[in-house]
Image 1: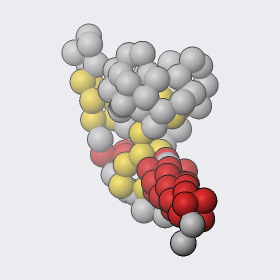
Image 2: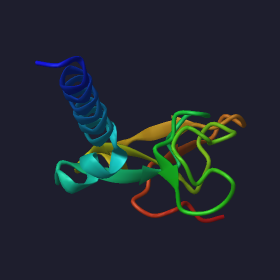
Image 3: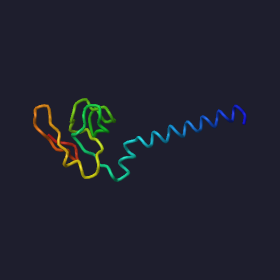
Image 4: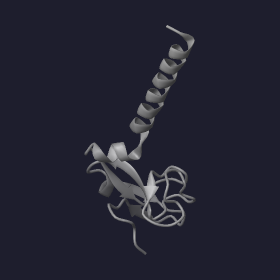
Amino acid sequence: MSHRTLSFAVAATLATAVSTAALLSSPAQAQTSGDKERCYGISMAGKNDCASTGNNSCAGTAKMDFEKAAWKYVAKGTCAGMQVQLKDGSKRMGSLEPVKG
């Protein structure tokens, strides 16, 4: 095998590995698996999977804990039972839709 052929094979293998890793770590992958659901208002700052509106529409960009529009993937059927304690001491349940008010 020539040096040129070997370099191409290594590059192709590396590209395949990087593409596969990106697909497996993607939030969209978790959504399509059917065993996850979006749970709004429960993610910690910087730990959200995405958001419906605002300045944190990408994963990991929530600026505050428990932002109302930020969501995190959780096991299907568990969101409504999740409870967080807000800074003022009040508690709020997770929501399948962006938290209003």
